[in-house]
Each structure stands twice: as structure tokens, then as C-alpha cells.
Image 1 (cartoon, rainbow over the protein chains, first blue to last red):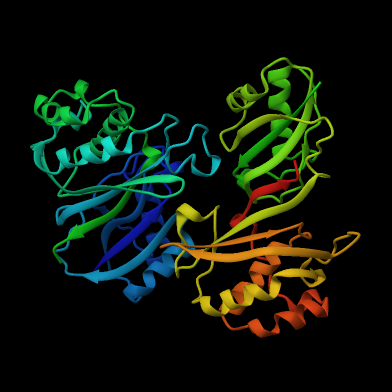
Image 2 (cartoon, each protein chain N blue to C red; image 1 turned 90 degrees about the vertical axis):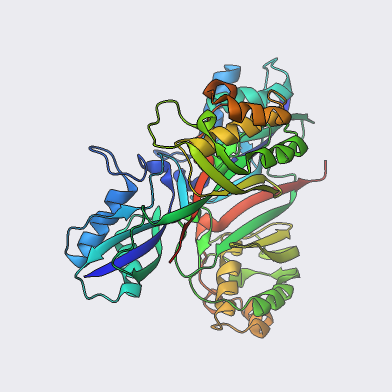
Length: 246
Length: 246
């Protein structure tokens, strides 16, 4: 038995998300089908975590066990010939049997892309959040620092979530502006459901002056979802990298 | 009567191209339908030129005449509410009655984007040409200079074309590399059918060593399509800007 770790890119536009669902197309199911075509085995693919419908990945990670004697580094090429064009395997390597893509993840990095022009751009319609308002990037950049470190992030969690602890640590949160796009990078030991999309929605409201950057510490402490901004749409979100100890 | 000049962006993936065709979706037809919904008039939209199926635009230009009393600068917003999400009007202005989007165009600028990694990227599948081979960018960059200036470009024209003259002037041809992408910018007084895509295909063959950069002057002089490289695919091509004297 070989434990195979896959690194996966996808355009999430046409999927219900990572996780398998009855009657809907999921990334997980597409890859499981491709593995079965290649290895002639039915496998269960373990992802590092879910992504929602419309959310993309540049570096999702998953693992599965196989008896196949296909060299592990060839798996990516074999799978890519079977996969639809909106999913790619960019790496396939052998890992220790104990490796588990979800339980062993010690951190994740996401990117969130905003297209900030008055009129929507067709090229980015599925790949960035179109914000037509003028944004105060100085205020936005100043506000990022309040999110850094370890906090109870219940304010920034979809209200119907059910988790053991709502404390998370953010160790990177910055933004970079290109000619057309604003790219946020946010890295932490884990994220609550919709946490990044609510943080970005809050950033946009800081940018238009609806929320004051200085109020973020109080808003975090309030644990009141209503004091945070809106949930930014899925199309701007990219799972960039999953971190492991080994 | 008002002569309205539109500047248009589109994702050409789901269209047969700019030009209206029986039984197929075209950009031109979508915009004509939107104008009719907004102005209650049936109009003929004159584009600066065709783009092929799969080719995109950041700055296509077109004009039409209207009796509507909608303020011209509001037309873009009205049209965008009627247009599909893969087409946007980014500017609508009044121009002199004699303005003709095709006859008055004195030049065009295109971009061509290459994604040069071993494995395809789902995000770019409709927006860049995936070249998996290692490319020699020094050779490619050196070769751009041979295309500059005024030449008979018959070598770089789809073989079934029918035009009065095959002489064109290229006054800009450069490339820029970002982390992921190689972006060619090419500007000239006009381009033959498939000219840019054949030039880019030739550049890729120079990059892999199949064609020598130094041979380009001879290849241009040969007027033999077979000596040029392949036709690069449409998804990497963007009509960036159309130039007018007024």
C-alpha cells in the first residue's frame, strides 16, 4: 500500500465545492473517479478541508492509499489525462502511511482577489470580487494588523457553524496591488467557516468608510457576527497552500 | 442622431467571435440586442474588426447611431444591465458623425499571454496558452526585433486569406514576465488574419530551439507560411486597444 499525497489546483466555478454531495459535481468526486480509472481501485480521497462552491485552489492537498504499482510521481500525469480541464494535479508524491491530509495540516494560506474598478471585467468575473466603490487602501492596510495574532474569531464565523473552539492564530495578512487587482494573502493555523470571506467583506467596508479600522479590536471582542462586514463572494477566494510538519 | 462610440471588454470563450453568424452566438449580436432593449431601436453595430472564437478583448471599439435621448455616458451602465456577464461596456461617448470604428482605425495593440509551466493551470485554461516546454526567453526576446518595422508579412498569414496588401508595420513588440505568465505586447498599423497567433507560435518554436531567431528575416522574406511556426491558440490573445486619430 502506498500513501499518495496530491497537490491540486482547480477552478471551483462549476462545482458544488470540494466535498462530495449527492446529485452535485464536486472536486473530490472528480478526482476519485480519475484515480479509479487510472488505478482500477475505488479509493477514498482525504482532503485537507472543504472549499465552497466557486472557491478556487492553487494548492489544495489530499491523500489516498493505493495498491497500484504506477510510479507515484507519474500519477499526476495519468490523472491529468482523465480529469476535466478545470482540475489539475500539480504534484503526486509518496508520504508516510500515517500522513493524513486533514488531521496533519498545521496551517493554511489563502489569497483573496478584488477587482476594484467602476465597471465589471468579464475576464475576472469568476476569479475576483468586483468592488466598484473607491477604496481607502491606507485604512485597509492599517486594519490588517488588528487581525494578526491569536484571537477568538467568533465574530468572523458564519452563524450556523459548529466547532469546538473558535480561537485561531493569524500569522500573515498583507495586500499587494497590481495594475488591475488587489491581492490579499492571509495565513494562519486554521480558519473558521467563512472566516476569510467575512474578514474581506469587513475590509471592503473599512475601505468605503462604513466600518472604522480602529474599531476592529472591539468588533473581534464583541463575538457578534452583526458587527462585522458582509461575506465577500466565493469567486475571489483561493486556497493557496496547506502546511504540514512533514 | 448621435454617433456613439463604445469601448468593450469580453471573454470570448463562449462566442463564435465578434462577428454575427447565423445560428451562433456572437459578441456583436449580444451588444446589438442590448442596444435594442435600451434604445428601442434596431441598430447596426460597426466593430473595429473581427476577433475569432475564444479571443478576448480589453478594448474593442465599435460605434452605432441612435435617436435615443439617453445621455451618451449613461449608455454603458444601461447596456451592462442587459448584457451577459462575459461582455462589458467600459466607455460610451459621443463622436463626430463621420467616425467609423473600422475605417478610421489607424492601429491596434494586442496582448498574448503564455502560461509556461509543465502542468496546465485550471484558472488560466481559457485565458492563456499553456506551453509545457522550457523556453529560452533570451532567444525569444532577441527575435522580437526582427518583426519591428514595415514588412510584407505574408509568411505570417493564414493561407486562405484574401487581402489587398500584405504589408504591415509593427511599432512595438515586447514581453514582460510575471511570476506565472509571459505577456507579449504587439502594436501595429494593422494585422493580417492570424498574424499575431502565427508570430507567437513562431516565438514558441524559437523558444524551444526549433526555429533560429536569426532566421526570422529570411523567413519573413520567403513569404512561405510553412517556414513560420504553428498558429498559437486563440485563448491567449487579447485585443487591448484600437487607435484613432480623433
